[in-house]
Image (cartoon, rainbow, N blue to C red; front, side, top):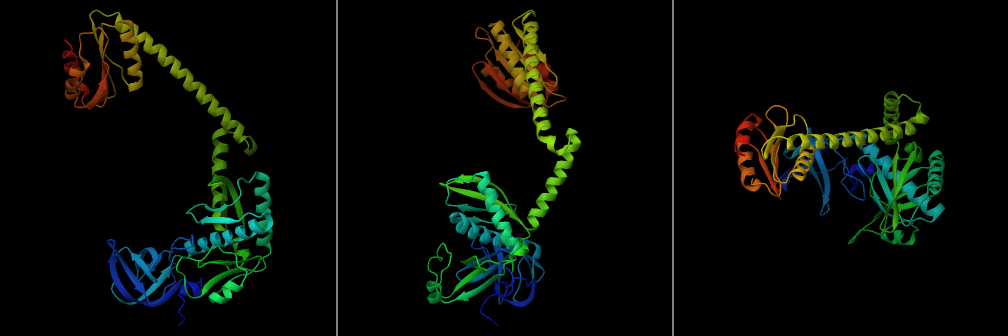
Length: 391
Protein backbone atom coordinates (compact mmCIF):
# COMPACT_ATOMS: atom_id res chain seq x y z
CA UNK A 1 0.00 0.00 0.00
CA UNK A 2 1.13 3.53 -0.75
CA UNK A 3 2.26 5.70 2.15
CA UNK A 4 -0.38 8.20 1.06
CA UNK A 5 -3.76 7.97 2.83
CA UNK A 6 -6.73 6.75 0.81
CA UNK A 7 -8.37 10.19 0.70
CA UNK A 8 -5.34 11.46 -1.22
CA UNK A 9 -4.90 8.40 -3.44
CA UNK A 10 -8.54 8.57 -4.54
CA UNK A 11 -10.65 11.49 -3.42
CA UNK A 12 -13.78 9.69 -4.66
CA UNK A 13 -13.33 6.62 -2.48
CA UNK A 14 -16.17 6.71 0.05
CA UNK A 15 -15.76 3.36 1.83
CA UNK A 16 -12.67 1.52 3.07
CA UNK A 17 -11.87 -1.65 5.02
CA UNK A 18 -8.98 -0.97 7.40
CA UNK A 19 -8.00 -1.47 11.03
CA UNK A 20 -7.82 0.51 14.25
CA UNK A 21 -4.18 0.60 15.31
CA UNK A 22 -4.62 2.87 18.31
CA UNK A 23 -7.55 3.92 20.51
CA UNK A 24 -7.60 6.42 23.33
CA UNK A 25 -9.11 9.58 24.78
CA UNK A 26 -7.95 13.16 24.25
CA UNK A 27 -9.51 16.16 25.98
CA UNK A 28 -12.29 13.90 27.21
CA UNK A 29 -13.19 12.66 23.72
CA UNK A 30 -12.54 9.14 22.38
CA UNK A 31 -10.42 8.81 19.25
CA UNK A 32 -8.87 6.19 17.02
CA UNK A 33 -5.89 6.08 14.68
CA UNK A 34 -6.45 3.96 11.58
CA UNK A 35 -4.05 2.08 9.34
CA UNK A 36 -5.61 3.99 6.44
CA UNK A 37 -8.51 6.41 6.03
CA UNK A 38 -10.80 8.01 3.49
CA UNK A 39 -11.56 10.86 5.91
CA UNK A 40 -9.71 14.11 5.27
CA UNK A 41 -8.30 15.86 8.37
CA UNK A 42 -8.97 19.59 8.71
CA UNK A 43 -6.30 21.70 7.07
CA UNK A 44 -5.48 24.27 4.42
CA UNK A 45 -8.77 26.08 4.89
CA UNK A 46 -10.80 22.92 4.31
CA UNK A 47 -12.92 21.49 7.17
CA UNK A 48 -12.55 17.89 8.28
CA UNK A 49 -14.59 15.15 6.67
CA UNK A 50 -17.27 13.40 8.69
CA UNK A 51 -18.54 9.83 8.50
CA UNK A 52 -18.45 6.62 10.50
CA UNK A 53 -15.77 4.22 11.68
CA UNK A 54 -16.96 0.76 12.64
CA UNK A 55 -20.49 2.11 12.79
CA UNK A 56 -19.51 4.89 15.24
CA UNK A 57 -20.07 8.52 14.20
CA UNK A 58 -16.92 10.57 13.54
CA UNK A 59 -17.28 14.13 14.92
CA UNK A 60 -13.88 15.48 13.84
CA UNK A 61 -10.66 14.48 12.06
CA UNK A 62 -7.40 16.20 12.95
CA UNK A 63 -3.74 15.71 12.12
CA UNK A 64 -1.55 15.84 15.25
CA UNK A 65 2.21 15.23 15.17
CA UNK A 66 1.95 13.43 11.85
CA UNK A 67 -0.87 11.15 13.03
CA UNK A 68 -4.52 11.41 11.92
CA UNK A 69 -6.90 11.32 14.88
CA UNK A 70 -10.53 10.36 14.26
CA UNK A 71 -12.62 11.80 17.09
CA UNK A 72 -15.64 9.61 17.85
CA UNK A 73 -18.99 9.91 19.59
CA UNK A 74 -18.29 6.72 21.56
CA UNK A 75 -15.14 4.65 22.18
CA UNK A 76 -14.03 1.96 19.74
CA UNK A 77 -11.66 -0.94 20.38
CA UNK A 78 -8.75 -1.89 18.06
CA UNK A 79 -9.62 -4.27 15.27
CA UNK A 80 -10.83 -4.45 11.67
CA UNK A 81 -13.35 -1.73 10.79
CA UNK A 82 -15.16 -0.18 7.86
CA UNK A 83 -14.67 3.55 7.32
CA UNK A 84 -17.60 5.31 5.64
CA UNK A 85 -17.32 8.84 4.26
CA UNK A 86 -20.12 11.41 4.27
CA UNK A 87 -19.78 11.81 0.51
CA UNK A 88 -22.27 14.64 0.15
CA UNK A 89 -20.26 16.78 2.55
CA UNK A 90 -16.96 15.76 0.91
CA UNK A 91 -18.08 16.59 -2.63
CA UNK A 92 -19.39 19.95 -1.43
CA UNK A 93 -15.94 20.67 0.01
CA UNK A 94 -14.31 19.55 -3.22
CA UNK A 95 -16.47 21.95 -5.21
CA UNK A 96 -15.90 24.93 -2.89
CA UNK A 97 -12.14 24.28 -2.59
CA UNK A 98 -11.63 23.81 -6.33
CA UNK A 99 -13.68 26.98 -6.87
CA UNK A 100 -11.23 28.81 -4.64
CA UNK A 101 -8.27 27.63 -6.72
CA UNK A 102 -9.99 28.78 -9.89
CA UNK A 103 -10.98 32.14 -8.41
CA UNK A 104 -7.45 32.66 -7.11
CA UNK A 105 -5.89 31.88 -10.49
CA UNK A 106 -8.26 34.05 -12.53
CA UNK A 107 -8.15 36.97 -10.06
CA UNK A 108 -4.35 36.97 -10.18
CA UNK A 109 -3.80 36.37 -13.89
CA UNK A 110 -6.61 38.55 -15.30
CA UNK A 111 -6.77 41.33 -12.70
CA UNK A 112 -3.52 41.20 -10.70
CA UNK A 113 -5.33 40.52 -7.42
CA UNK A 114 -3.41 38.06 -5.23
CA UNK A 115 -5.19 35.81 -2.73
CA UNK A 116 -4.06 36.30 0.87
CA UNK A 117 -6.52 34.00 2.69
CA UNK A 118 -9.27 31.44 2.09
CA UNK A 119 -12.15 30.23 4.25
CA UNK A 120 -14.48 27.36 3.40
CA UNK A 121 -17.62 28.08 5.41
CA UNK A 122 -20.62 25.91 6.16
CA UNK A 123 -22.89 27.91 3.87
CA UNK A 124 -20.72 30.53 2.14
CA UNK A 125 -16.99 30.52 1.36
CA UNK A 126 -14.67 33.44 0.73
CA UNK A 127 -11.24 34.46 -0.48
CA UNK A 128 -9.36 37.58 0.56
CA UNK A 129 -7.73 39.55 -2.26
CA UNK A 130 -5.01 42.19 -1.90
CA UNK A 131 -7.04 44.95 -3.55
CA UNK A 132 -8.61 47.79 -1.53
CA UNK A 133 -12.01 47.56 -3.24
CA UNK A 134 -13.83 45.74 -6.04
CA UNK A 135 -16.82 47.45 -7.60
CA UNK A 136 -19.87 45.68 -9.05
CA UNK A 137 -18.56 45.92 -12.59
CA UNK A 138 -15.23 44.33 -11.69
CA UNK A 139 -17.00 41.62 -9.69
CA UNK A 140 -19.12 40.77 -12.72
CA UNK A 141 -16.04 40.62 -14.97
CA UNK A 142 -14.34 38.25 -12.51
CA UNK A 143 -17.43 36.04 -12.36
CA UNK A 144 -17.71 35.96 -16.16
CA UNK A 145 -14.02 35.05 -16.54
CA UNK A 146 -14.39 32.21 -14.02
CA UNK A 147 -17.53 30.95 -15.80
CA UNK A 148 -15.56 30.70 -19.05
CA UNK A 149 -12.98 28.44 -17.38
CA UNK A 150 -15.75 26.24 -15.95
CA UNK A 151 -17.20 25.80 -19.46
CA UNK A 152 -13.71 24.91 -20.71
CA UNK A 153 -13.84 21.76 -18.52
CA UNK A 154 -10.17 22.05 -17.63
CA UNK A 155 -8.75 18.90 -15.98
CA UNK A 156 -7.75 19.20 -12.32
CA UNK A 157 -4.98 16.88 -11.15
CA UNK A 158 -2.74 16.41 -8.13
CA UNK A 159 0.80 15.09 -7.81
CA UNK A 160 3.68 15.07 -5.37
CA UNK A 161 7.13 16.41 -6.21
CA UNK A 162 10.45 16.55 -4.41
CA UNK A 163 11.52 19.72 -2.68
CA UNK A 164 14.17 20.24 -5.37
CA UNK A 165 11.59 19.98 -8.15
CA UNK A 166 9.22 22.26 -6.25
CA UNK A 167 11.87 24.93 -5.95
CA UNK A 168 12.55 24.71 -9.70
CA UNK A 169 8.88 24.88 -10.66
CA UNK A 170 6.78 28.00 -11.16
CA UNK A 171 4.19 27.35 -8.46
CA UNK A 172 1.54 29.66 -7.07
CA UNK A 173 1.96 29.39 -3.31
CA UNK A 174 1.61 31.41 -0.13
CA UNK A 175 4.48 29.39 1.33
CA UNK A 176 4.90 25.95 2.84
CA UNK A 177 3.99 25.27 6.49
CA UNK A 178 6.71 26.01 9.03
CA UNK A 179 8.98 23.03 9.50
CA UNK A 180 7.81 21.29 6.32
CA UNK A 181 10.04 18.48 5.07
CA UNK A 182 9.74 15.86 2.38
CA UNK A 183 7.85 16.11 -0.87
CA UNK A 184 5.28 18.72 -1.80
CA UNK A 185 1.76 18.14 -3.12
CA UNK A 186 0.76 20.23 -6.12
CA UNK A 187 -2.75 20.69 -7.51
CA UNK A 188 -3.00 21.78 -11.14
CA UNK A 189 -5.85 23.26 -13.14
CA UNK A 190 -4.67 22.53 -16.64
CA UNK A 191 -3.32 25.58 -18.40
CA UNK A 192 -4.09 28.18 -15.74
CA UNK A 193 -2.90 27.19 -12.25
CA UNK A 194 -0.35 25.15 -10.33
CA UNK A 195 -0.72 25.45 -6.59
CA UNK A 196 0.51 23.83 -3.39
CA UNK A 197 -2.41 22.20 -1.59
CA UNK A 198 -3.18 19.12 0.48
CA UNK A 199 -6.98 19.27 0.09
CA UNK A 200 -9.46 17.29 -1.98
CA UNK A 201 -10.60 18.64 -5.36
CA UNK A 202 -12.84 18.00 -8.33
CA UNK A 203 -11.36 16.25 -11.36
CA UNK A 204 -12.46 18.97 -13.78
CA UNK A 205 -13.61 22.57 -13.60
CA UNK A 206 -16.83 21.32 -15.23
CA UNK A 207 -17.69 19.62 -11.94
CA UNK A 208 -17.95 23.04 -10.34
CA UNK A 209 -21.16 23.52 -12.39
CA UNK A 210 -21.15 27.28 -11.67
CA UNK A 211 -19.75 29.86 -9.26
CA UNK A 212 -21.73 32.83 -8.00
CA UNK A 213 -19.94 35.78 -6.40
CA UNK A 214 -22.26 37.04 -3.67
CA UNK A 215 -20.58 40.29 -2.71
CA UNK A 216 -17.53 41.85 -1.08
CA UNK A 217 -16.37 43.24 2.23
CA UNK A 218 -13.38 45.44 3.04
CA UNK A 219 -11.00 43.74 5.42
CA UNK A 220 -7.45 44.47 6.62
CA UNK A 221 -6.76 46.75 3.66
CA UNK A 222 -7.94 44.12 1.17
CA UNK A 223 -11.26 42.79 -0.05
CA UNK A 224 -13.07 39.63 0.97
CA UNK A 225 -15.09 38.07 -1.86
CA UNK A 226 -17.95 35.74 -0.87
CA UNK A 227 -19.02 32.92 -3.17
CA UNK A 228 -20.93 29.66 -3.53
CA UNK A 229 -20.32 26.93 -6.07
CA UNK A 230 -21.92 23.78 -7.42
CA UNK A 231 -24.71 22.14 -5.49
CA UNK A 232 -24.60 24.92 -2.89
CA UNK A 233 -25.47 27.39 -5.62
CA UNK A 234 -28.37 25.29 -6.87
CA UNK A 235 -29.67 24.80 -3.33
CA UNK A 236 -29.34 28.51 -2.58
CA UNK A 237 -31.13 29.40 -5.81
CA UNK A 238 -33.96 27.03 -4.90
CA UNK A 239 -34.28 28.66 -1.50
CA UNK A 240 -34.34 32.11 -3.06
CA UNK A 241 -37.06 31.03 -5.52
CA UNK A 242 -39.19 29.65 -2.67
CA UNK A 243 -38.63 32.79 -0.61
CA UNK A 244 -39.55 35.02 -3.55
CA UNK A 245 -42.75 33.02 -4.11
CA UNK A 246 -43.69 33.51 -0.46
CA UNK A 247 -43.03 37.24 -0.71
CA UNK A 248 -45.19 37.45 -3.84
CA UNK A 249 -47.99 35.86 -1.88
CA UNK A 250 -47.56 38.16 1.11
CA UNK A 251 -47.16 41.40 -0.83
CA UNK A 252 -49.41 40.55 -3.77
CA UNK A 253 -47.09 41.92 -6.46
CA UNK A 254 -44.85 40.64 -9.25
CA UNK A 255 -41.17 39.88 -8.70
CA UNK A 256 -39.91 43.17 -10.11
CA UNK A 257 -42.20 45.09 -7.73
CA UNK A 258 -41.21 43.24 -4.54
CA UNK A 259 -38.62 45.74 -3.31
CA UNK A 260 -40.88 48.75 -3.80
CA UNK A 261 -43.78 46.95 -2.14
CA UNK A 262 -41.63 45.89 0.80
CA UNK A 263 -40.30 49.42 1.28
CA UNK A 264 -43.86 50.76 1.22
CA UNK A 265 -44.99 48.22 3.83
CA UNK A 266 -42.02 49.07 6.06
CA UNK A 267 -42.83 52.78 5.85
CA UNK A 268 -46.46 52.02 6.68
CA UNK A 269 -45.36 50.00 9.71
CA UNK A 270 -43.12 52.85 10.83
CA UNK A 271 -46.01 55.30 10.42
CA UNK A 272 -48.22 52.99 12.44
CA UNK A 273 -45.59 52.68 15.17
CA UNK A 274 -45.26 56.48 15.33
CA UNK A 275 -49.05 56.78 15.63
CA UNK A 276 -49.13 54.18 18.41
CA UNK A 277 -46.39 56.01 20.31
CA UNK A 278 -48.25 59.31 19.99
CA UNK A 279 -51.53 57.77 21.15
CA UNK A 280 -49.78 56.04 24.07
CA UNK A 281 -48.25 59.36 25.10
CA UNK A 282 -51.66 61.02 24.94
CA UNK A 283 -53.21 58.16 26.89
CA UNK A 284 -50.45 58.31 29.51
CA UNK A 285 -50.99 62.06 29.92
CA UNK A 286 -54.76 61.64 30.23
CA UNK A 287 -54.42 58.80 32.73
CA UNK A 288 -51.90 60.75 34.79
CA UNK A 289 -54.32 63.72 34.91
CA UNK A 290 -57.13 61.43 36.09
CA UNK A 291 -54.94 59.96 38.85
CA UNK A 292 -53.79 63.42 39.92
CA UNK A 293 -57.42 64.51 40.28
CA UNK A 294 -58.16 61.82 42.82
CA UNK A 295 -58.29 62.63 46.50
CA UNK A 296 -55.21 62.04 48.64
CA UNK A 297 -51.56 61.98 47.78
CA UNK A 298 -51.24 58.26 46.93
CA UNK A 299 -52.67 56.71 43.76
CA UNK A 300 -52.84 53.10 42.60
CA UNK A 301 -53.94 51.66 39.28
CA UNK A 302 -53.77 48.36 37.40
CA UNK A 303 -53.04 49.01 33.72
CA UNK A 304 -54.01 45.67 32.25
CA UNK A 305 -51.77 44.51 29.40
CA UNK A 306 -49.64 47.67 29.12
CA UNK A 307 -45.86 47.30 29.35
CA UNK A 308 -43.32 48.77 31.76
CA UNK A 309 -42.46 51.58 29.36
CA UNK A 310 -46.08 52.83 29.41
CA UNK A 311 -46.12 52.60 33.21
CA UNK A 312 -42.99 54.75 33.35
CA UNK A 313 -44.64 57.40 31.13
CA UNK A 314 -47.70 57.55 33.39
CA UNK A 315 -45.55 57.82 36.53
CA UNK A 316 -43.40 60.59 35.06
CA UNK A 317 -46.45 62.58 33.98
CA UNK A 318 -48.19 62.12 37.32
CA UNK A 319 -45.26 63.12 39.54
CA UNK A 320 -44.57 66.13 37.32
CA UNK A 321 -48.19 67.26 37.71
CA UNK A 322 -48.19 66.67 41.47
CA UNK A 323 -44.75 66.46 43.10
CA UNK A 324 -46.34 65.49 46.44
CA UNK A 325 -48.01 62.41 45.02
CA UNK A 326 -46.86 58.78 45.00
CA UNK A 327 -48.26 56.10 42.70
CA UNK A 328 -48.21 52.31 42.56
CA UNK A 329 -48.87 50.96 39.08
CA UNK A 330 -49.20 47.32 38.09
CA UNK A 331 -49.74 45.66 34.73
CA UNK A 332 -50.13 42.14 33.46
CA UNK A 333 -52.61 39.38 32.73
CA UNK A 334 -53.13 36.84 35.49
CA UNK A 335 -50.50 36.61 38.19
CA UNK A 336 -47.41 37.59 36.20
CA UNK A 337 -46.59 41.13 35.19
CA UNK A 338 -44.84 44.32 36.30
CA UNK A 339 -45.04 46.80 39.15
CA UNK A 340 -43.76 50.35 39.53
CA UNK A 341 -43.68 52.57 42.61
CA UNK A 342 -42.89 56.24 41.97
CA UNK A 343 -42.78 59.12 44.44
CA UNK A 344 -42.69 62.82 43.59
CA UNK A 345 -39.94 65.07 44.93
CA UNK A 346 -42.16 66.32 47.77
CA UNK A 347 -43.83 62.98 48.53
CA UNK A 348 -43.55 61.50 52.03
CA UNK A 349 -43.30 57.99 50.49
CA UNK A 350 -39.81 56.46 50.50
CA UNK A 351 -39.72 54.35 47.33
CA UNK A 352 -36.36 52.80 48.19
CA UNK A 353 -37.76 51.52 51.52
CA UNK A 354 -41.25 50.46 50.40
CA UNK A 355 -40.23 49.15 46.95
CA UNK A 356 -38.50 45.98 48.19
CA UNK A 357 -41.43 45.25 50.53
CA UNK A 358 -43.87 45.55 47.66
CA UNK A 359 -41.66 43.31 45.51
CA UNK A 360 -41.69 40.73 48.32
CA UNK A 361 -45.50 40.85 48.59
CA UNK A 362 -45.83 40.42 44.84
CA UNK A 363 -43.25 37.59 44.90
CA UNK A 364 -41.10 39.46 42.43
CA UNK A 365 -37.80 41.27 42.11
CA UNK A 366 -36.88 44.82 41.27
CA UNK A 367 -34.67 47.80 41.80
CA UNK A 368 -34.49 51.49 41.24
CA UNK A 369 -33.25 54.92 42.16
CA UNK A 370 -34.37 58.56 42.30
CA UNK A 371 -37.79 57.91 43.76
CA UNK A 372 -38.66 55.00 41.46
CA UNK A 373 -38.68 51.28 42.24
CA UNK A 374 -39.83 48.83 39.57
CA UNK A 375 -39.61 45.20 38.62
CA UNK A 376 -41.29 41.89 37.80
CA UNK A 377 -44.29 40.56 39.72
CA UNK A 378 -45.32 36.91 40.02
CA UNK A 379 -48.31 37.32 42.38
CA UNK A 380 -50.47 40.22 41.20
CA UNK A 381 -53.35 38.87 43.25
CA UNK A 382 -51.51 40.39 46.26
CA UNK A 383 -51.86 43.86 44.71
CA UNK A 384 -54.35 45.12 47.31
CA UNK A 385 -51.97 44.16 50.14
CA UNK A 386 -49.22 46.08 48.35
CA UNK A 387 -51.48 49.15 48.00
CA UNK A 388 -52.22 48.93 51.73
CA UNK A 389 -48.51 49.38 52.50
CA UNK A 390 -48.72 52.89 51.09
CA UNK A 391 -51.21 53.90 53.82
